[in-house]
Amino acid sequence: MNPQGIAILGSTGSIGCNTLRVIESLGEKRFRVVALAAGQNVEALADQIASHLPDVVSVETETVAHELRARLFERNVDLPKIVIGETGLVEVATHPQADCVVSATVGAVGFVPTLRALEAGKRVALANKETLVMAGELMTRAARASGAELLPIDSEHNALHQCLRGETLAEIKRIILTASGGPFRTKSKADMKAATVSEAMRHPTWNMGAKITIDSATLMNKGLEVIEAHWLFGFEPEQIGIVVHPESVVHSMIELIDGSVIAQMGVTDMRHAIQYALTYPERHSCELPPLDLAALASLHFEAPDLDRFPCISLAYRALREGGTLPTAMNAANEEAVRAFIDERICLTDIPRVIETVMDEHATQPATDLDTIITTDQASRLSAIAVIEKLTKESDMLAARPV
Ligand SMILES: NC(=O)c1ccc[n+]([C@@H]2O[C@H](COP(=O)([O-])OP(=O)(O)OC[C@H]3O[C@@H](n4cnc5c(N)ncnc54)[C@H](OP(=O)(O)O)[C@@H]3O)[C@@H](O)[C@H]2O)c1
Image (spheres, rainbow, N blue to C red):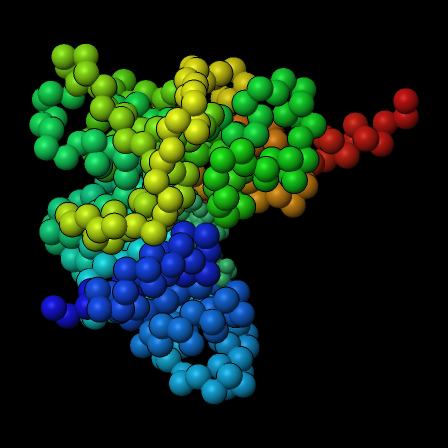
């Protein structure tokens, strides 16, 4: 049997590195890494190239490509073809020898490359949920047209995919996404307003990249996942529920029409979900320790607090209204998260920025690439204007004599 060709978008990130660990643990006979795409992390990328010898590698800019060539030359590693920017990401995503593309860049930068992989009929193992939020209709239509499989890596959707195996849609009443609740689950609104970036980055159960960690602190991550679940599995907003489960052991559940609930459980490590997406429909033993329920002793569940976490309602609103509103919401969220990480706004300003951009947005059908890209860019500009206004207001408050 020939090894399966794998291309990874975002290979130096948290999901990208875990994907390579899974590939290494399953052995080279099963998989061959044919192409890698990263942003700027030359050190990690050079190590990955030395270990996996891909044919093509993409980086964000020519300067990064220059540094990478120098690093590989010093280490006496054969140079792969090095490509740049969005064209480079697309070249990695459509590499002729790639059977499966792991989409694990963060945010809208992954949208066009992931779409091109689906159009080319590749299996896409999707972590980069923002791409489905901003253009769910376009992406799922492309997959249907080419016959490409779209398999979720996100642990909740991966769990749902496992629970849904063998069930018919008519027998399912609803799906229930679990949420850890993030670092502010038990904190007051005032604590959340005063939260520092390092407090928001302290996720209680998962170790992930910066953007998704902040999304988990505002619970916008769960909002994005509601929209992702709609596009992956075809459920309507009222059939998608959320329950807060601080231990992150139950990764999600389905409720059947007879009242039975089927849950998928596992240790809190993304390698399970990644391995499932890479090897589906087969299952293979995994190097992770087994789930020890007796050691855990108890599991807790509670309803999400929509008042302290308004991003959840914003996401349901975007899904219900549809069209370009989720695209606008996603763009506003990306800009607001960046502004929070740069300490220009506070955590509780994130939903304010998103809501203002959504209120100002004139929703249109989201059926073509140009409309999605124009909406994404325009909504970023609107978000930046709201962020500047908020920054000026807080500067004025700070300058006011007491
Ligand atoms: N981490 C998790 O456990 C987890 C779980 C579920 C879903 N997800 C989703 O998976 C996606 C990735 O998350 P992550 O936590 O792995 O993120 P991350 O650690 O921040 O990694 C992001 C990756 O994207 C690359 N990248 C960023 N900007 C780029 C650009 N302009 N051009 C090319 N590459 C670029 C980064 O490259 P450099 O680092 O080289 O700059 C890095 O390889 C997100 O959509 C997230 O929501 C993550």
